[in-house]
Length: 354
Ligand SMILES: NC(=O)c1ccc[n+]([C@@H]2O[C@H](COP(=O)([O-])OP(=O)(O)OC[C@H]3O[C@@H](n4cnc5c(N)ncnc54)[C@H](O)[C@@H]3O)[C@@H](O)[C@H]2O)c1
Image 1 (spheres, rainbow, N blue to C red):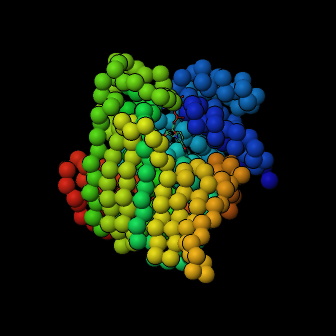
Image 2 (cartoon, rainbow, N blue to C red):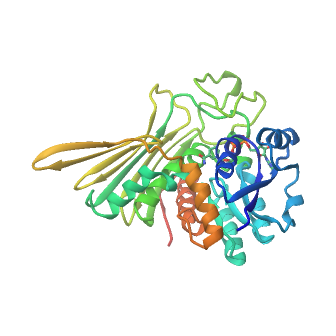
Image 3 (cartoon, helix red, strand yellow):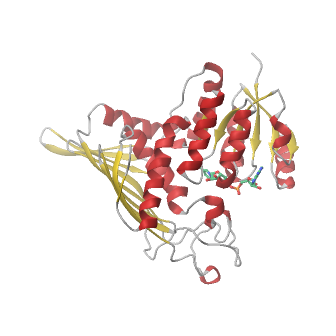
């Protein structure tokens, strides 16, 4: 069978750290194009990986009949238009997370997927993480009993990414820490808990520490350095509570806050047992056995979930199977995030329609 020819759109951090190496490791795939609007980035990729051709406008690739699949690794504001253009050109798409800036925009992607019948997976990579899948299985099999509460925490001290740039500009990113980190955390909760339906949502967002860009003091800044004359109009922290037909979910997120501790975990709290998943690391199960308290640690998986994500995308193309990151499934996470943003914008609790 001939290899699946792919194009990588956007040759920045996630493309170089995850998508490109994973395609290169998969014997079924061949990268034909590296595309970036910054020409040097596309050129550098061709040079570094020793394959493919550099292009600077993705529309040049749309009509290449050899291209079967693309990875969209651009900033959030162009996820929807680029993904939709490729779907309509008959290509399969793996689009980085979040699907889009808003639920409405994500729905247009879902519509294009349905119209064309092509694969559209979203880069919610934790759905391919072995540890996350073990937790999902434990919940499905009732090991935790009734999971009545999920506590979600993604809080850092001073870690706003690229202050003033794409990540902190609402027009580009759609939002701040909730859409950037929260999407991964909420997506894990939705996946492990079987997509509970939200009933009411209450949230507040804050944009406090990033608002004076030149005065911002930080411990770490990925996607930096800061742009002193740039834009900061997104939230750097968020709190929220969601009542669902399953567990109540509480959300505490901060790219930056004046607390010098880092908390990156999800607690799944059931009436028989509980699990704390340390994001990207190990998880601990707490329960009882023979009248005694027990706690068992499952170490961080050795497998690379980005590789599993790309392998699954290629398999979906070959076999027609539907991955757990398919837009039709992931759209529920977009809906939940939108409800949190809407509640915060209106400063009140909202009912969520089915
Ligand atoms: N799955 C994860 O864990 C994870 C981690 C990091 C980033 N991401 C997501 O990946 C996306 C990219 O993030 P990043 O950190 O790699 O950003 P980045 O800025 O490092 O890279 C994005 C690249 O896209 C290029 N680009 C912008 N518009 C384009 C267009 N119209 N056509 C072609 N190229 C274009 C930019 O020039 C840039 O080189 C974001 O949506 C982000 O949320 C996901």
